[in-house]
Image (cartoon, rainbow, N blue to C red; front, side, top):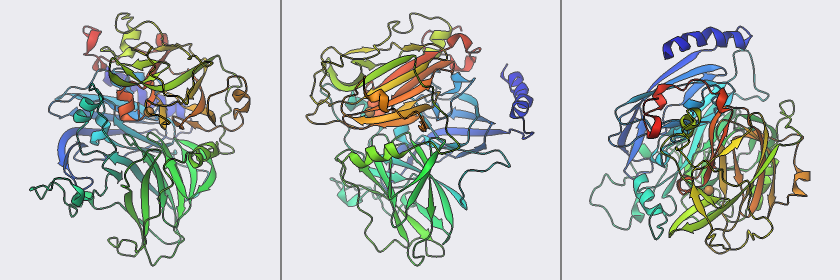
Length: 568
Ligand code: C2O
Ligand code: CU
């Protein structure tokens, strides 16, 4: 019955739109395949879309309908694609999170995603099946304003960069290590990619290969990213991160970056030398090509928050008409000190909603949930957990189980709303022996206001706490505040920013710190809220919220086919 609904959709959107501006339908046909590529000069089997990684950029205007027909041409793996930052209002079944909103797309089959991009801004898409995003299945979604409307800032050109980190071993090898007893850590990524291109030092391979194609720095796949600029012009640079593990610092040698957008929301502009960016975040920065035009400049990404080997991502800002192959004569700018979290905390706190574009948050919330983020060992298996519960996926996607009342599909006991605040020392290494694993979920009252406090803590290693970027599906949240140490229930809420908080869909919780969020549970569906680090989510660092299930429309049969969904 999809075609009928689809026909009805067109005049409806034009009507809702009100301005006589016609919302368009943008159709894409994607083939997802395994191919050998050398994004950082080292050959690896990757996952491409229409032959490319990063995949094609979706460009649309606000209120357009996007239709993507995805054919899974992988030989043995399932897929699912998530539209990160798109709230899927009215289409919760096309969120693309496997196990939560749909069954996986089997090899040899085609799945049709159809949704409306209802807000302008910079978004991404990526695989949401296992840790498949690490294999290269990702890309950008850029939503412009309707014709005749303009941004509250001026620029001459619009450019897009996705940052990533890159492992040489396969996602499957990583998964085996992470679930092994004893735990076998996958280590740091081998390189950083700037828009799908990096540079691995082939001479550092421990065993030189007899195969000259295995690692070859002259391979065109790894020709470094070039951004060509015209002197005097201003560029809007959309910068997104889809790293599997790393927190990054991004900078352009000699150029200041003015931050104007974060996760699709306008930011009260502020200037930085380097932009800290966490997996799942998107920003727009303005860059003016106002430096000496006779030379080129480095564009770099560096790992922060982990003691990673020095494997910077490098690209070049080319001043037209300089030769694009000419590398700068300078040494690339130094990376910030990896373990100093203060400048990162300061930058997080500097991000406020732009004047004239402030969405004032509700003054009070109906429910406060505190999420203690810890590592632990469960039956000899290393896991991450939230309030001592390590998340596992059920076989039947939640949206289907909830809508069809399949009460045996997942644990009906909800996980806890908090932890033992009084007695838990976040600076100590805890075995967290009472940890359980569960696929229970948080049921939110429809339209209620929910506060989430993310509380960071020590990992299984002494004196160590990591940065976790938490991403919420189906909603944006207000970022009410960040702090160091243990969240104080009585005093910290008084310091919340209720005046001009930014709205985002992904936010870091800094080492040994806390982050406070508020959102309205107004989008009927089942939504994942998780750490955007692939290995952390794989190891249980996530939860699921469900709200307004009775308001969810008839589920399309295309999302069925797994677990207890047969016959629905
Ligand atoms: Cu971009 Cu559930 O993630
Ligand atoms: Cu994490």
